[in-house]
Length: 189
Image 1 (cartoon, rainbow, N blue to C red):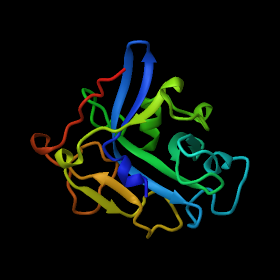
Image 2 (image 1 turned 180 degrees about the vertical axis):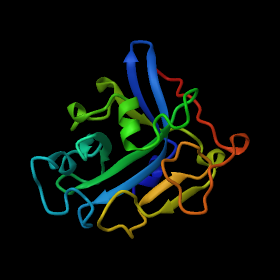
Image 3 (image 1 turned 90 degrees about the vertical axis):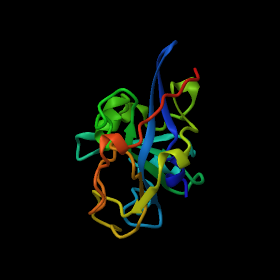
Image 4 (image 1 turned 45 degrees about the vertical axis):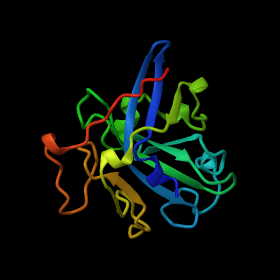
């Protein structure tokens, strides 16, 4: 399963030759063709074709006609698998600026125009290994949110020590500022 392994990775956007926007992924959800909440569950359509495509490409759709949701295609070609990026922490910015799929897409300038774009430095968006999970703390596995089907599948993961998580499980309080994990910055260009 790819989704929990993306926690701690950097999503990077090249803004200019010498300027990057970097954020650490702190919350993800997995979707797969065999379960009813996946856009590929009922088969291929023009809308979901990207989800059946090459792993490592963006699958971006509009939710309720308002917010872009950024997914990364995973698994194998011709089988709908994807990881929804739910929240990212960005060093030096408001901890909630990319907390939730719509805010994340907005902060990184991602919309349907980037659907099916391969993540690659050549395309100005890419992923790289990032934070040491031991330093970051524990990862919570729980059920997905904002869906009406297959709600009981525990395919959402988040970094417990991050204040940038979009929604915590009941009883899991936001860590105090003096005890929370803070993101670092990707240094390579």
